[in-house]
Image (tube, rainbow over all chains, first blue to last red; front, top):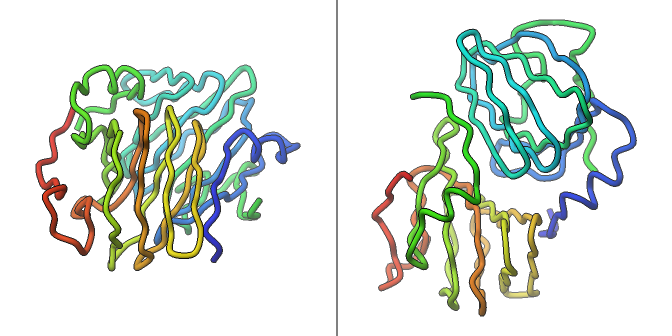
Length: 121
Length: 121
C-alpha cells in the first residue's frame, strides 16, 4: 500500500452522512475510522477488544454503568474490552475510532444501528 | 485500570524534556505515547510492526528511501513494518505515537538515541 499522509479535516470533508464509518488507515490488524456522529447510541460492549475514541471536533459523551465521560476536542479515552458503554452526541461530533479490523460498531448487540459496510476514503 | 479521559495538551504540559517518550494510554497490547521532538533522528525500521505517527502540533518530516513525507497538525501517517524511515523536526513538534508496547524507538538499530525507559504520565 502506498504510504500517504492523512489529514483528518480533509477526510471529514469527504464524509457527507452521519453515522457512516469510513476507514482512513490501517496499522497491523487495526483500522483507524472516522465518523460524524449526532445521536444517542445503544448500550453495548466489545467482548474481545479495547476500543479507542479520539475526538477531533465537538463533544462526545460516553455513559458507563458507573459514571459518565465527557470527551472534548483532542481528548481520547480507551474503553476496555467487556465494559458496557453508550456513546452520544447531541450536536455533530467528529470522532476517530481505533479498533481491530473485525470490530463491529454495536459490539455484542445486533441492532438496526449495526454497520458492517466499511468503505475506505 | 480506571477509565479516564486523556487531554493531549494537558499531558504535553507535563512533559518538560525533549525526546522523552511518555505513555498516556494502552489499547490491548498497544501503547499511545507522546513525545516532544526537535532533532534529526536516525534511519531505522521496525521489522515486526507498523507504526503510527499523529502530529498534535508542529511539523514533522519523515524521510523514506524514495520520498519525503511532511506531516502537519492533525495529520497522521502509518509507516509499514520493515520500511526504513528517518523522522526529523527542526522546530519543536508534538507527536502521538501508536505502536505495540514492546516497540523500541530506534527499531532495528541500537544507538545512543535508543530509549528503553517508558514512564506513564
